[in-house]
Length: 366
Ligand code: F6R
Figure 1: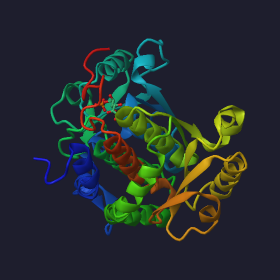
Figure 2 (figure 1 turned 30 degrees about the vertical axis):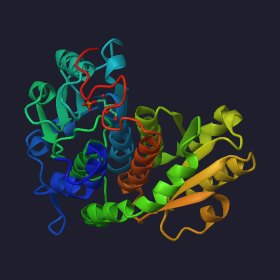
Figure 3 (figure 1 turned 180 degrees about the horizontal axis):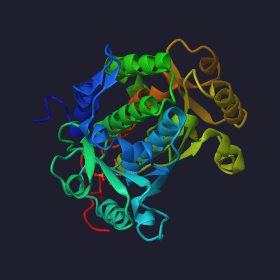
C-alpha cells in the first residue's frame, strides 16, 4: 500500500507530479486558453462582485491560503485576507453578503474551519470550499467548491494536499484575473503554459533527493532552525518550518526574510542553520543581501535556488536547486526540497514520520 516507499509521507511527496496533474486535468486547457471550473463558472458574479475574499483554514492549509493571497492580489487584484479559522470564528469578523469566503481543508473535517464556514454563512457570505476528501463535512457545508483530487493523504504531515491546494487556488486566481480583465492576454497564456509544466518540474526537483539526504545528515542534530523567504515564498518558509517541527520535533521558525533584522537575527550563530528560499525572480537581490547578513554572523546557510544560480552558491554552505518557473508558481517547486529535508531528518532521528506524537490527521475537535 506504500507502493514500495518506506513511509506514506515519502510516497505522497513523490506522488506530487501526478497529484498536481490530476488537480488540473480537465480544468486547465492551456492551448485553448481556458480554465474550466464549474464551481467558479456557476457563481462567477459572486466572485467578480466581491468586496474582498477571506480565506479561512488551519495549519498547512492556512499556508496554502497565504500563497493564494499573493496570487489573487497580484493577478486578479481582489483584496484578500487570510485567517486562522480558530481566530476568525471568535472574532466577530466583518463579513457581509458582499464577501466571498474560501475555506481550505484537506480532510474537510477540521472543526474550527467548519465553525468559521457556519459563521460566514450566517453573515450572508458566499462560501467556497477547497477540499481533498470528497463528500466531507466542509465539502457539504459550503455553497460550492473545487476538489483538489490529490488522492488519499495518509501521512499526518500534509504534503501533496498543500501543492494541490495551491494548484486549485492558482487556477481560480487566473480565471478571475481573466474574467475581470486584470491580466494581459499574453501573461495569462504564459501562466497557463507554465502551470502545465509544473508536474515535470516537480519531478525534476524530486531528483535532488540524494543531495538533500546529505544536507539532512549535516543538520539533523540542530536544536533550532530558521526558514526565510519573501513574497510568494514567505508562506513556503512557514510551511518548511512547520514540516520540520511536526515530524522531527526540532524547533523551527519561518519568517519573511526582511523581518530577520527586527529580532530573530539575534538568534544567529554558528549553531543555527538558516534555510533561505532565494529563487531568481521577485526579491532575489534583497534576499541575497539578507543571506549576507546571516553569513556575517556565522549562521549556516542552505539556499533553495533556481538552477544555475551563481551568487548564492558563493555565500551558502549548501544549495539545493529547483527548476526555473514564473515567480507566482515557485511555491510549487520550492516546497519540494523542504518536504524532503524534513522527511530525511525525521527518519535519521528515528521519529515516527507518518504518525508524529500528539498529532492527528484530522482535528475534529476545537
Ligand atoms: C500539517 C498538518 C496540519 C493540517 C491542519 C488542517 O502538516 O497536517 O497542520 O494542515 O490540521 O487540516 P485540514 O487541511 O484537513 O483542514
